[in-house]
Length: 114
Length: 115
Image (tube, rainbow over all chains, first blue to last red; front, side, top):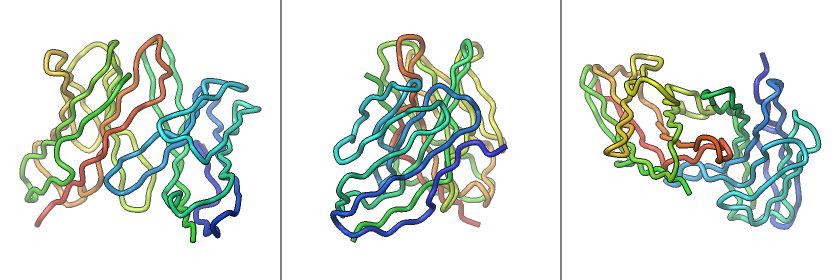
């Protein structure tokens, strides 16, 4: 089982460059989300999606765009990279089945903006 | 809105000692509660969760947590620490029907285990 797959694992960008972090899940989960992890800050929600074609902003959305054209994929776009976006990015997918729910995480993308 | 507060960014214990990691939540509706563990340079792995039913929840690796509604707490415990328990631990909350089921995380607690 692949679960949640993120690519790339590592990336170095120059300030002002744009790029897309890829996230794919093969569990047919409704919900997908992007977090960034910074020391001492825990995981902060960037954007999330409750289904194909539906996205919404999280706690720290500025500088990022998302779209969800299929259930499986939820790419995160950095429009014009800034050093403040240096972070580890995690994609997650989650489900709800009756009273049960759980989120599954990818292995992360470590992004450095110079 | 939902939120989570983890008390203590670092907890240090000796091998064999009790582990207690504290988590308090805020939610306007009945919550789902989770503990995740992150080993160095890895993603997050679910330790345990409370969704409904029994308030004492057992997870993997000997960890357990108790949901206390009156105290809005979901503290994580393990009777005897092992060196392999050294990791970052995150408490998270997501809300039941009406919410988005997207978890909100605390800032994390780093567990240090001394020989």
